[in-house]
Image 1 (cartoon, rainbow, N blue to C red):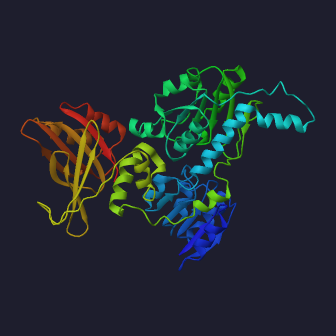
Image 2 (cartoon, helix red, strand yellow):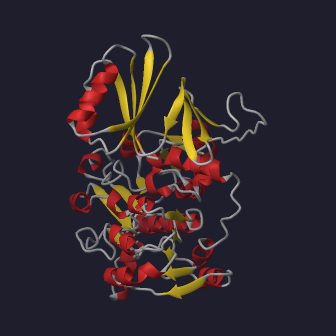
Image 3 (spheres, rainbow, N blue to C red):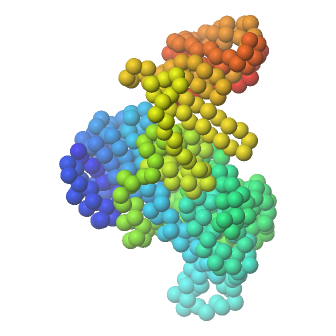
Length: 463
């Protein structure tokens, strides 16, 4: 097996790979996109950090690639859908640099509060501008955290030790979990309105992209200070720069950028902005931690796969087969496994139940023969649901014409149904339609289905 190390990796990490039997390691740092495409085809694995961009083009050229391992937390630089289609496993090591990133966040906050970089630069120029660089205490100030995952929770702990009041926003964290941290949960608007300092610790998703924008800045306190050591695109640089220039925002500290090295300097060039070149994980300890052994996960591969599928829509690229159990634990999700020697109806059966305060979801699956997976129960509906191809799940009322209407609507968009399963609770009651199609139903087709009488819900599934 050949492994390409294409970014600066700890010598300890490279040694672990080279000492592993059957692995041949090449270290080629600083490859251009074209150079990477030219050589990637001969490798079975890649070890990267943040500099290498594993784009769809790179993946298309990677004929033998089986795994991409990121020594770090984020996977913004990997085209996950393209890798998934090629059957390439993508994994990261989010816990390894959590402490280092949290410490860098706190360092940035303290430097921001006391104008340390600006004062240092002034002293280097031979000036003594004591009055110009007066700062503010962090003691008894309110720190708002967007995201209370592995990094955010450590920041919260250290900030409480500094005597700060910490409020946080995290849709996957329970009140009980937050209370155990000493953090008060609040809405985004509450955090914007009440915080003296705001620090971002969120993954890059459609919901978080540009979350620090003019609309939300207007909700913030006058003189707020903002720290971003998470992802560059969660900040709208231009709109935040305008807020700094107007005095609405007293200062900004950033370690990450939409493009690295940054091309847009509208924020960087302002006097009240502190910048570092993505140093959040740049300590000796962190570089060694992200090359550690990840083989001792608590849960089995099947449970881990289920957790990955459950959490991915919520956390996007930050969840994978390696970190899913740890992510679930951090979010206060209790996971239990029960094995029974007999199943009522099948030789073997997998049953997954997700229980929340408001609802309970049940899914059961089995194998037909030796290699044909089937879902045999979805909530209260039983059937033999084929999981191959493009999938649509519709919930409807069991009325005449529903099935025909669905078939006709898809036919109008050139979508052929290859397999169809129908289940209902009772005649005239709630029904489930599970469809396999030869081609993907686009958004227009879904809208047509939603407009049908007696169709209550439709979902396009990804397996």
